[in-house]
Structures are given as C-alpha cells and as structure tokens.
Image 1 (cartoon, one colour):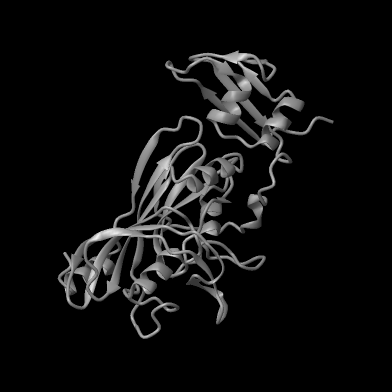
Image 2 (cartoon, rainbow, N blue to C red):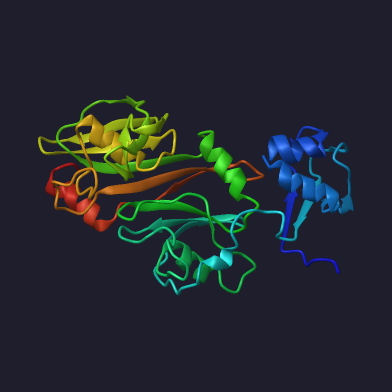
Length: 304
C-alpha cells in the first residue's frame, strides 16, 4: 500500500533562476539535507513541471518543482507531541506556508519539558494550527523570562534549512536589554561559553567544554544606574546574551541566574528576526514591539 503524502511543497523558480541540475537546486541552493534528497529520488517524489526527473536533469527559470513527503523522511519529533491549547492571545507577527514568527511573552515557556505539559508557546502554536495540515516544529527557543520574536516551523522539511541559516549567521536575531550600570559605546564580545563548573545547569565564560560565542552590542541610551543596549547574536549558545553581559560587568536587570542581587523582572526582549525564507531566500525583517512594561521602565530611568 502506498503511504499517504503528508507534505506537498510546490515552488516556482524565479524568472532570473540560472540553469542548474535538480540536485544542485535541492542541495546547494535550497539547502535540503542529503537524507531528504535521497527519499525524493528513491521514491520519485520530486517533479519538474509535473513530471519526475532524475537529479542530473537541468532546471530553468520559471520551472515548477513539486516535492512530496510521506513523513518518515524526517527525524524531527512529530508535531503531535505538543498538546494543542487554545491561544486567543497568541501574537503572530508573520506567517507564510512554512513558518510563523510569534511574539513570546515573558514568563511563558518556549516548549514543554515533560510529556503532556501544556501552556507553552509550542502548545499555543499547535492550537492555532489545529484544523490545518500543519504542525508546530521547534526551530529555536527563548528563555522563560525572555520575551520577543520566536520562529516556529509549520512543517519539519524547513527545520534543517532554518537551522543551517541560523548557524551560518544568515538569519539574525536581535535583542534589547536593560542592564546594570553605564555601558557605553559599541563592540563585540568574543568570549567562549561552557558549563559553569560550580553548577552544570548554568553557563560561564571559559566554562567546561567551552565553545566559541560572539555577541555584538551597541549602546542605545545610558544613565548612571541603567543602560539600554541593542544586541545581535552571531552564535547561539545557551544563555549567551545573559552570560556575556554578566561577564562584562553589566548583567541584565532582573536576571534570576546571572544577576541574583536584582529583585526585579528580567528585561530582555527579542526585538527583531531578520529572516531568510526557505526556498525563495527572500529577506524579511520581522519586528516585535517592546512590551508596555519595558517601555514604562525605560521612561522611569530616562532611557527613552
């Protein structure tokens, strides 16, 4: 019995598409992993202008390419691991066929930590997509007390593509943070991050098994007690922004781990996702407005 098609993705090549082999289109241009290409070829599930073609056949401008997937080609956990929950206040900033960007509130988990857990962003997205052929697939996460723009894939085919674009720095994530003290100027922190030798749950500069980590920062406003900074991740290590800011001597206000002397709520917000869309590779700037409490805090400390 032939398995049912779970995902059917259709792309029409642009009018300025240069001729190349179908394999190069899938692998080099669209960044599909070898595993997916293998199944497309073996099952004859890739069509050019409605007909199956071998991988060496050239494709041209304005050709239509169809890719069919049964579901067993991907290793991404099934979307139904996220129990759908009603999300009347889910703030969708951008959506297309393959992904959406949501504005995660502070205090909400990105994803469940145990089976059956609900109330997370991924549960809300699963509920939002109920009734469609789409599901919620994790691309990246935001910490519990971090708010802002978060990408969620609607099918698992684009997850490895998005992950690669993030790893290569083509998708940029930008943040605003209020930090302790007067942090001025702009620059780059290039401090490796590893596990904290005192507590392996947390991270530290030059910690155990440290990996390279790079953060670009720019002062937006500075007072004697607080500063507003713009941050851009060039890498995506766990707690990277929080660790780099704490190591610089300017921890984030309210950070419960790296600024334990602060009794305020954490002020770190993902202001922008500079997206590169799979397949078309169009660039989009998706902005997440600052929460009201964040704006009020800036006014209080004259950082606006």
